[in-house]
Length: 265
Image 1 (tube, rainbow, N blue to C red):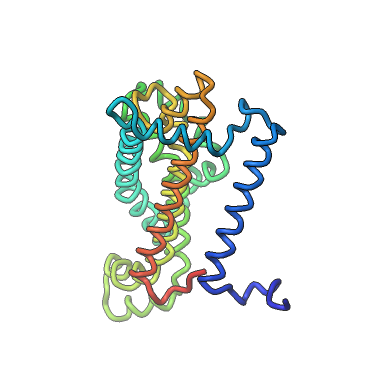
Image 2: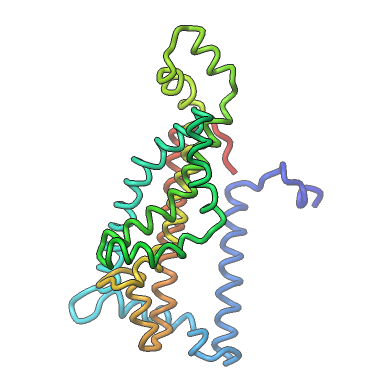
């Protein structure tokens, strides 16, 4: 019992799975009780079995799967935005971390958005880009990159100065110092930044697809809400949560394989 409040003693993988299953089971039991006994009405909290029925309806009805189509579109938008985040966000973050002057110039443009909601920029994006795919991808990109860039910058700055000095003393150019001495040390934290950025994109996908999307998980939820099909709304939300969780765990697994010396909790 003494280890219960000890943050340095981690439970075993089996204990983790058991605790996770226990927590999920408790939530499902509470959910079933609240809806099954009528404590909360179906217009506010549909029963789990109704959500399961809605999931089946969305998965296959009249020879088509609305859920599969919506999921593919949402994942496609995520991939497009994610590629832009990697190609643009990581180089900017590395440049800010490696150069104090670049950091001083760009920090006032990047740091405020870490606390300000990117949703506030949605009307501007609609005005500039319209309501087509470009706007949705740009919104996802901005929502993620404002978190990624500062975290990449901090990862570069966290590399001990001795790595810079040692590479420079060996005759490395500034670019060689970054590429061969600094980036390998910073890559685990950059991977963490990318995991956070992708997780943030999943939180914004519903908002992005609310705006005139013909198909997508956000639009599926929006259409269900218009017709007060709350079981379908919950089904769509659960699918997004599951996809976000699977993506998170997959990226953590890839990071563990690439950087096995890192300590994982």
